[in-house]
Image 1: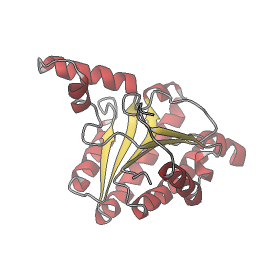
Image 2: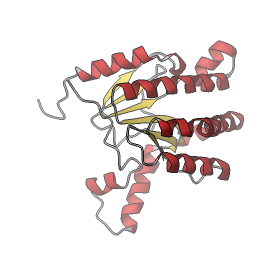
Image 3: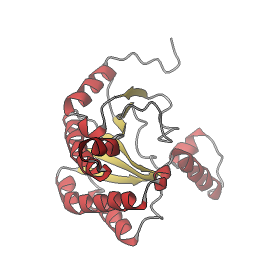
Length: 225
């Protein structure tokens, strides 16, 4: 049985779900938050220590401004309401991605949530917002160059946004899309990948546990026979 330390998820399909239900992409984003809370609970039940959620990519800035503003207001309000609860449940929140572009208000909330939950160790949630793996690699290489160190595998890993997390054991992508979308390209080198046809708001705890069970029984060779 394979042990699971780290699960990464591309939470795809919120907008499409909202359009199908009420002709509103924003409704889908709100429904997606409910799924996130369910999956966090199941992750803790399964004693998994790291969960990385792809919330907003560097490419998502191409979306309509109204939708982007709604997403960030949704995130802001979620953290204001839920950070203390995350802290009580011993959950650590870490933001991965470039925070510089966000409003002062959102940056303040993100930093406060990280600070409040910093010492927790039951589960670490890496929330990927304004995240792109190619940008992350450039960021890591530039940090190494500033330190005047050699550009090698170990130094790159030490300077990634995810430097204190193990590589994901598995990636789950919902939404019936078969691509990685510039997500954790370095870290996913040997992760098992599971694609799910369901849109993210329809993804259930049962779906999640079925995938975890399949992973535990998957033969992993890492290049060996």
